Length: 317
Image (cartoon, rainbow, N blue to C red; front, side, top):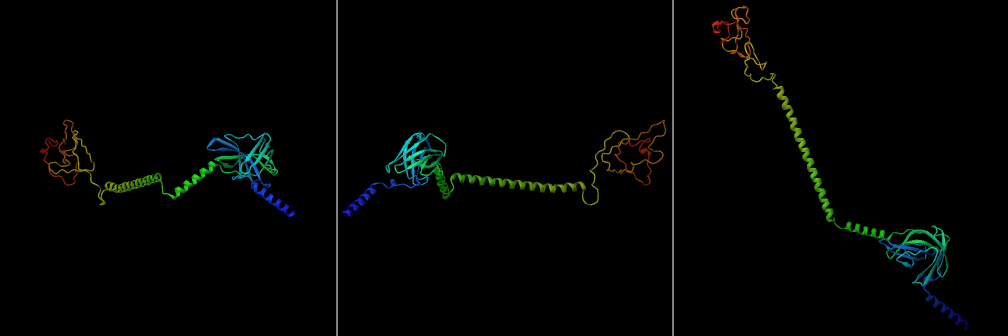
C-alpha cells in the first residue's frame, strides 16, 4: 500500500513538471529585466516601450520581450507597469518611484518567482527589435547595484556597415566601372599632352640657344676682320662736295687720292707760283674745283710746269 502511494506521488510530480514550461522554473541570481524605450532610426514616429528579460547580463540578444506600448514611449516613472511574456505566461510587475538620476534606486519588481530591485540607468542602446533601436531606462536585478551594460550598434549603423562591406566586396571582385575608365583615360591623355608640351619647349630652347651661339662668333669675326694682320679696308670713296674756293671736305679720312695728269701736280713749285699772295695791289685766287678733295705729296724733284697752263697764276680754268 505504501509503495503504491509513493508511486502515485512521483508520477503526479512528473506530470506537473511536464505541464509547466521550462522558462518559468526558478531563476538564478544573475537574471535581469530591463525597461526600454525603442525608436526606429529611419522613422522617428515608429516608437515602442518594452519589458525585456535576460537570464544573465543585458546584451544585444534578449531571451524574451514583452511589448508595453506601440506608437509612443511609455512613462515608466511614478507608476506600476506590467509586462506579460506570452511564451511563458509570466508577468513582470514593476513599481517605480518618480524620475531620479542614473544609478539611483528606482523601485521594485516581481515576476511571481522572486523580487527584483530596480535602478534608474543612463539611456544606452542595448538591442534592436522590429527595426527599432531600444535604449534601457531601468534595470531590475537581484544585486545591490545596476548591471554593467555594453552599448550595442544601431540598426542604421549596422545596415550601413553591411552595405558598405557588400559594396566594397562587389567593387573589389568586379572590373572597373565606366566612370573609373573614363577618368583614367582623361588622366592618361592629359599627362601625354603635358609631356609633349615640355618636350617641344626644351627642343625649341635648345635650337635657339645653339643658333645664338653660332651667330656670336660670326659677328666677332666681322668686327675683327680676317686673321691676316691687315686692317680692314675702308669703303670706296664718295664724291666730294664743292663748297667754295679753298675748301676741301673729306668724308673718309683714311682715303688717299692720286693725280695722274702731269699738268696737275699736287703742289706748285717755283717763286712764280705760291700758295700765298704778298702783293697788295693784286689779289690772286686759286681755283680748285677741278681738283679732288685730297693731295698726294710727292717728294721727287718737280718737273717743269708751264705757267700758261693755269693762266695769270690761277689754277685750272
